[in-house]
Image 1 (cartoon, rainbow, N blue to C red):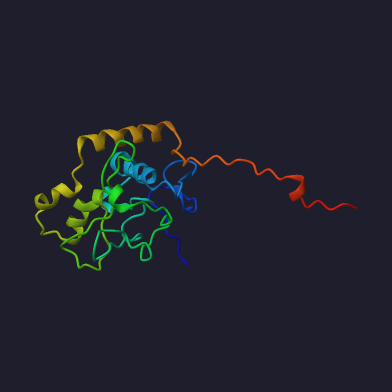
Image 2: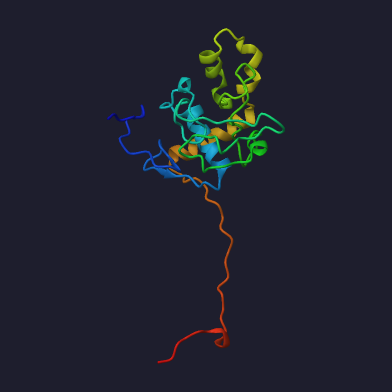
Length: 195
């Protein structure tokens, strides 16, 4: 019998749909994929506890061998969720939207195709691509692929805002639930029993 532990000194059992680095296990809303990506991206880019060379997963921060994401090999680029291995794999996002940074969804960290890997190989995350090259393809010219992991100024600025909120303890925005109106039953449609 053996125990697998993270390098962050946490002895808690990993709980799916939580941030492992935000105390106490900050919940992640599976319906808010872009916010989860931004939260984890801020950790990857700015958290000194993260070792980028370990290629942390973009939705759970586990190192690369633990989580595997596969991309479709035909048609539009999409994640094949049925083959994905990650404790937070219930946190879905639309690939085409997530691949582009916006003010409301600043992270563009998505799994990307590596043209040097076989098509059936797991896809490395965009922010980790440099480390993927160094590990899997050490003779590949890094400058040829630099556009993959290079972030724009707006993306960096917006993710720094997310990081500031994390360090201040601001909770991750939750999905707004639609307002529900109370169901009114008429006396004619009531099924009370009289005794």
